Length: 279
Length: 289
Figure (cartoon, rainbow over the protein chains, first blue to last red):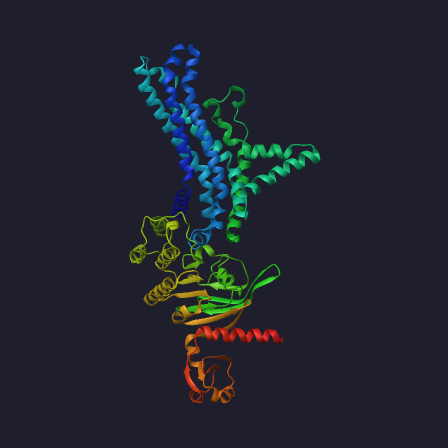
């Protein structure tokens, strides 16, 4: 456990972008919100009662979506470099001289996108929402509007809860096979890991389409790597509530199949880290 | 029990043979130099010993199989392969924190004491250090680990003379303080000569020469022979001969010291000369067969 903890810390020392990028996105969201504050009182005054809810909630939802997007992009690039970069700069020779097993190292690297980044993103999202709420609470009374206009239409706790559920369930667990695949390629490739990660699945889909005019591989890949769309997401638009995993999430076969595939891919990455030398 | 024990150690990469069946018996408290030309198989042998590469044949380090028991082995074995493999992004303080947290045999106070003798700042990143300082840092970390076996592969390659000397002085001082077994591969023979207790010459995947330094001192003599006595000196079967200024230098193995003394000034040959003699002997043999 000690080794795992320090290996995760080590990853965060090395890859400062994994928290700096979401931090910057959070800053950008706040900046946008700050600019928009000027016309918020006017919008709220002229809005019909049913629109108020949407106007109040929208920046929080958009902010959360932006941060989720940042988390996903950062995770993908992190995984592609995680086991490739250390071989390229030869530092793997130093890490391997330490009594930390390949299993621990690969597990630490996998936990960054599966657990650490979703939680970190969540904390940033809540913090961003909190600052936005405080800003509204200052600006609205100053314009003769009640701050309760915002608080009555917005339950920050509920949004935070949905957000946490979505991040952990989908961005962490559901996408785990995607991260594991990228880690495997990262452990295997001697150059351009990005291309090796993308081309084989793409080739599979293209060949299948042309040869058999079927889309089984494409469907599977989409389901495995991009996740089933959250129930309701397509019909009711992007509300925070629709992004919350339903209770049956934990018994979905897709989840467990994905986690099993994740385990196999990570096992492969462990084996490769052991046998592959520096580039 | 020998610390490092190998029997018929082999490693092939496709058709090329990197290690062609080598035997090793290295006990406790030895400093063994592995010397050979580029591509002789030194790195492959060391990588097998520290569990970085698979192999055929038998190999045990501290009684363990380095390939299958690598994780456990790394608590007792430490290695530096290649200079400047410390990650460039890490800060000196982070490196100390990490090794201190991870390694049960790491003595942080010792590492700090070593680093305080250098100009390396704790807050510096490795990428801000010179190549020599990176090596100092790496050595400082590794020396503070109470490992029973230390494996070094070209640890001073590309460093200037000052750092190289410092490196081996530190190694020796540390060894005298706390004996362990050190295996060091290099082709910069001169600097490690005075540090070693044993030496191995390796060529084309085989060990071609294996002696303790004491052995070398008692068995090998180099004689500076004046041209007048050259013929009679050659009659004593030198294993190598080279031309000096105004004299020839003949290398003898196991010859009668008294007879040699009459031929000219005598001294123990340097490892470099011995290496050249052994290797050129092999090359001519190779040419003949």
